[in-house]
Each structure stands twice: as structure tokens, then as C-alpha cells.
Length: 81
Image 1 (cartoon, rainbow, N blue to C red):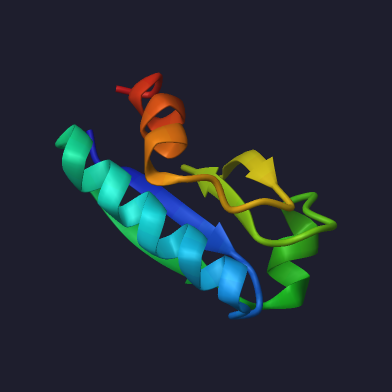
Image 2 (cartoon, rainbow, N blue to C red):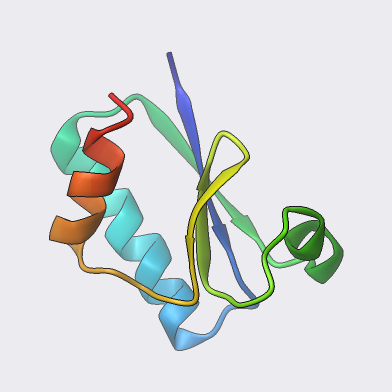
């Protein structure tokens, strides 16, 4: 089943790093996924996120206010397989 990996943020350096790291982690894990950037502040706050960058999978927020490494994200995303 395809996972929707969502990166929430306004496009700052950390947001871009989180997007790149999450995409690389998903590829290395062999996940069936699609990436989505969410920069709309209303959508971000509707998801309960107060600090960006944040990462959500299928609409469920997994982390916020940080941009973990590829290895850390592989551990997090690997639990969703």
C-alpha cells in the first residue's frame, strides 16, 4: 500500500533537508510512497503542527520541530512497513 509522506514547512533550509532526507530514507527502505510538501499555514495548523519542519505519513504527524538524519528517518519509517 502506497504511503503518503508529507513534509510540512514553509521552505526553510531545515524543511528542505527534511524533505530530501525523508525521500532518501523511503527509497533506501524500498517503500511504495509519494512525497508531498505542505507549505499552507492553515493546513499545517489544521494538522496540529505548531513548529516546523514536521513529518507526517498518511496524515499522521510523526515528528515536528526537527530535521532528523536519513538513518533516524529510516528507523522511523521502517516501523511503518
